[in-house]
Image (cartoon, rainbow, N blue to C red; front, side, top):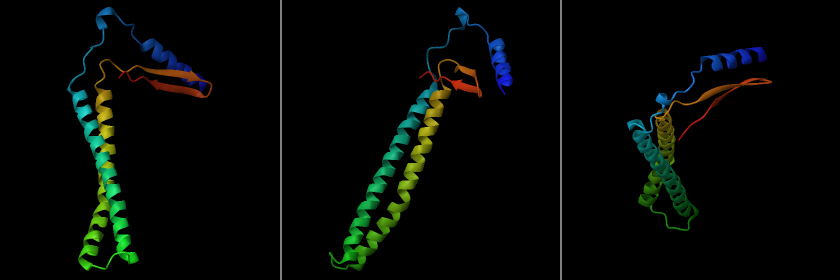
Length: 138
């Protein structure tokens, strides 16, 4: 395994091209970064909506518990509304949290893909085999 890692490291070194002055990396980001930032904002919004849904679920559950314990008088219409709110509040937080996480992941991917220069990747040989490293310039 060590021999294989040394061969791969040597191949990476041999295949690398030395940098020249005219190969300067571009200094600006493209439209994909703007899309990534918008997706990040939407992802945080989705997470906030999911957290708000969790808080709404706890609130509806507590209000429904008051009616069940007898602290409030039984009113079938109010109990029905509270049960519906609680049922809605069970599903919507997961939708918001799931969408928020997916949008955050897509936003990070867009920002990383629109890096102003090629991402430096290196293979480092170790005693156990090798290690692939990736440096993300943000």
